[in-house]
Length: 381
Image 1 (cartoon, rainbow, N blue to C red):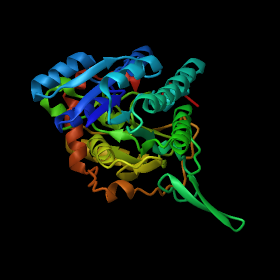
Image 2: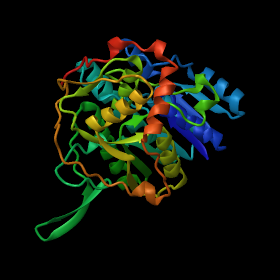
Image 3: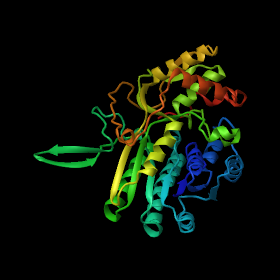
Image 4: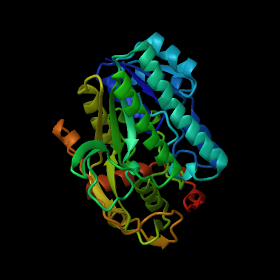
């Protein structure tokens, strides 16, 4: 296939590009380095220094013999995205081109405005680029389990059947996000569903849980091919933060009581799931929603696993509960379904003690890069 990856410089975008290129697909990425610039502005740079996209592409080609095309441009600018579609003619688009941080979106007006405009315009422009230049193209969009919030009922896979006053219908599952970032993802889904209904687009929306990890088969070809791994309070997911804190020898910062439950996924499984979605397209006029996570853990359970693995490696990990900087339910019901990807053949990677220890050892290779001032939460809402 001809696969265009929006946000191809990101934590997930770059590994996805390498994976599809390794499988023999014709791959092009587009990115404007927004996340890198935001991280620099916030004092939240990645753990390791990553080459720019053109250099990454050259390094990957030398290591694998596979090519990845590069466009440096803003997906929120329709002219740039339209030109990429005209020139590349994609069969599939994988859409990662969004500001991905909940804390960042809650910092203030400027950050909220940037989040809203970037995320919605990127999705809107993608829709119209497909309509105008590639109407048979399959859109694979990275959503988030955070769209659902923590309702006091089971979370179905995107849709719910409702009976009301003797009548019944099927609707998008009610969603109630806890941040502006997650709210933009809800609006993405609504935009996509509108254009699917009215213009017969083909869309898969992947509701993904927080991702952890930094190594993939392709990144093992060379250290300069590693993804942009963040461990800070703004862009780092909780598992990645805890792993880095353990390596740095500082206490794991559990927000509040630590009883918050979410569904987590290894970056290796993100690539597997996106591959399955791409290889199993939907028909025109269909919005398929797949919940994408591997295991449910509370924050306390994650901290305990990292502590156990770290202690076995002689790290003497300490866990510390701090005041929760976020407005969220700490005790709640959480039971989401996730059968769709398993029905497509996905075999999940579980977060075993051995997996955690291997991650700790990998991060320890970059221990000298860790800035301990980036750990404590700087943003409250």
